[in-house]
Image (cartoon, rainbow over all chains, first blue to last red; front, side, top):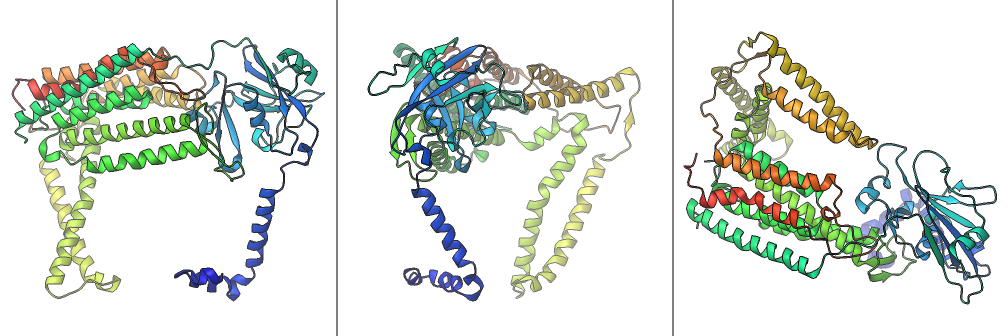
Length: 247
Length: 350
């Protein structure tokens, strides 16, 4: 505050903060700041400090298309959430940041929507039955909806997680209930490899995320069209202005 | 003369509608760039000199839009295969990868916004609102008159306020604070009432508010039924589009628009006769502009309905150069027909 008081207009702020009116509020502000700083430095989950392991991932694209992946989970206390698990699987993923709400997944492989539609309602239209990417937690009894979302819940070793492109309420019916061993078998994971590497296998997906690029001749053609339009346009503007008597 | 090309206001509306439609549908940077070039050409060739305000403010606006679009996208979308830089992951909100993909998407979004503003300002400079009011259907004529009276209210009030304040200052009365505003408000109110009387008399002289003439026969109410039916279809189509549940909305919106247009163009069952001192003529130039613009819009709508990827540009998750589609690139210059008319047409100016 002493430093602040030396800075021009901040003198008034300093006096105001230490005035009788604000003195009651100040401890609360300081406590909040300390708590925020503590939250920023403490590891996200105590469960992450465990031995190295893997987590399974099942992705349902609808229309009987699935991806199965097994991803090593870091054991050094590093933050590793559901979106990290998805990105580490090797699948092309489009996820956007929603600030304090965390991240939203817009597209996995070729299924989903672009950034503009995703920003509006996470790919959903006004119809509640329209699909979006939902995050599921696996278990012995089947799938359950994640209460915190993918970026808000840490991934635990030995568990199976899921993503389903579906609308409506609840867990989609076509989501297969699988144990980690099942996912390992379906993804072709090599548990003897050292170090452990992610494994991924997709079934029933039509098309890939690779964009269709034009040839260099086509780009040259496009450049020629733009250049010709620019030249012709300049001539038209010049002639029209001459006719209208504009200098 | 409405512009150097002297094109009818209805043809300009078709041109503007087509350009807006393309700018809203397309995200391919090549298409947006070409559309922007066409609009600049039409602006340069067709906007009359007295309305050709500088584009400096627009060019100053462009980098601001670009910066906002790029920064917002860079900091909110971390996806993409081309990493530009990485911010420490323990930084709240800002931490993570910044990608070339996000930068490309931000640039394309800013380009689309800039082209939309360019089209809007160009159309605004090309259309004279008096001409627009003249070609409006009989049904909306009272609304147009009321709108134009309301539109000039604020500038007239501002002018009166300035005049009265200057008169007071010349007489040694300084306007400082609310207390000194009282002698200013009274003449302002008097002038407003006087102007209202003059406007009312002018409207009365022109027959506004006269006794409506009733039309008889079956066709008199057919137009009303078509209009109401069209509005219902249009509302249902917009609702369906917002809900996104079925694919019937293009049909409903299309049919609704046609029905509303047909119903609005027919004279209502009861209306006040309308006199026009200058009747708008539609000639070959207008047909050329309207048909070429509609053809371009048709090409793009066909591309959109067939789901052609060349219309869009999605840099996620893999960044690649935009797809070239010669059908669209060769169709777009047709929007520059008004510029060609302004440069070469031998028809007499209106």
